[in-house]
Length: 218
Image (cartoon, rainbow, N blue to C red; front, top):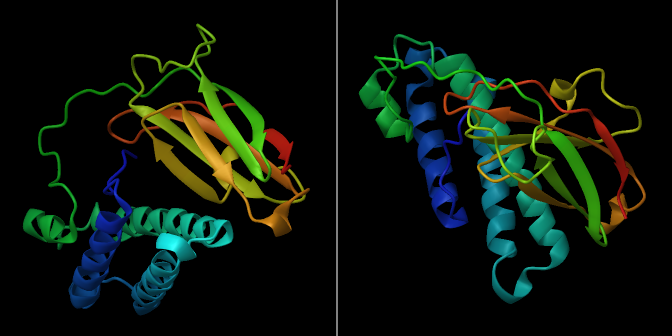
């Protein structure tokens, strides 16, 4: 899925609060479960709290990492809500989507082929408690995307055993660039973390996943 969120964190927070408010006000008519709405609003409040705490001189490394983790989890939650309750819901009009901060439905779809190649995922420890993930082009071996790719989706999770499939990895982030930096708090030093990546086209359709890579948090 192509990224739907503003890049600036302050804009992202305002976007989230608007999305949550519009969703809450229309949950009944759009048949969105009460628990889904309440969990989202609670997560937005928790993110706002740590976002404010991490600003300025009080922004410790631990707070910044916690903020980034909450932001990524919220993005995954919003994508799931969008897919389950909004994208295929006839009760949600184009004007409703605009009020939510989403684009109108594409009434005249144009062919956008699904990516066919899989990236070669490289994981390198670049600092204490930090990994840098790079999706290398399978054909060239370089840091370039194939022509049918709009960007790269990176997934990861700290866990003891490898997942059966890349889709089982809990944390997901989409980037137009082929590099993503993962930071971890001190208490996660020495733990196993698993990574995978795939290309996405502009319609959010994914290509084949890379190999799942296991690494130890330095």
